[in-house]
Image (tube, rainbow, N blue to C red; front, side, top):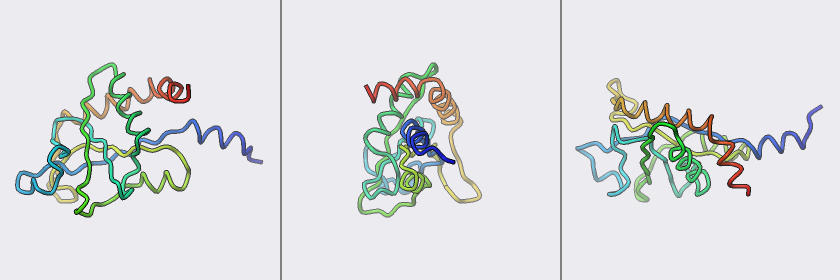
Length: 150
């Protein structure tokens, strides 16, 4: 039989990195992004935020991502992405996982041009930023999580 207390404890200690891609600012469509929140290729992992909850990032989970980058052994560049309120946007699996499980979730992505086309393009430096962030997650998450609870 399942132990409800064990399940509750595991859920409280869990954290989801919902990672996919992010639409980089396209030179021909710069107006589609908020002026100071447009992802650039080779400039870092994107923390994705949307007030209509199309992304799962909130204040706490965004903080955890920033702390993971700060504590990484190798440099991790981060960018903040906020969808313009007058532009529709897609979503990720992050809000679905978070809503159905109650597990804290942050939506992240690597900037790219021409998403969903046969010529998707992204910067190599962002792969390194992502790898360094993921390594930091496995090394530093428990310490950051305990800091939040303290």
